[in-house]
Length: 73
Image 1 (cartoon, helix red, strand yellow):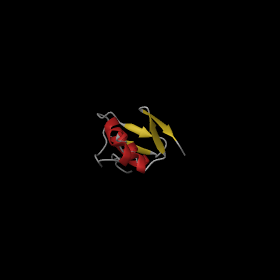
Image 2 (cartoon, rainbow, N blue to C red; image 1 turned 90 degrees about the vertical axis):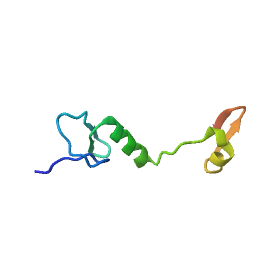
Image 3 (cartoon, one colour; image 1 turned 180 degrees about the vertical axis):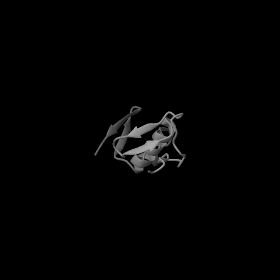
Image 4 (cartoon, helix red, strand yellow; image 1 turned 120 degrees about the vertical axis):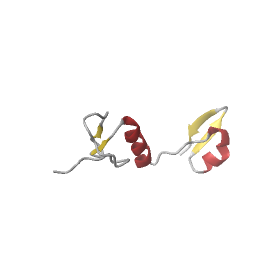
């Protein structure tokens, strides 16, 4: 028998927690915040700075036209 721990913070899980389970990554999390943080890291999610468009656009195939963003790939 193995003690379950949060996949994000390694906290031991108990029945007093708001446990989340991901069917996609088949992992348990001690709360929704740990799960969400893990998912963002897993997916490589990073902020897209709309206030520094030249820098942000350099790494993406996106163009700003009249304040709206368009996919130009």
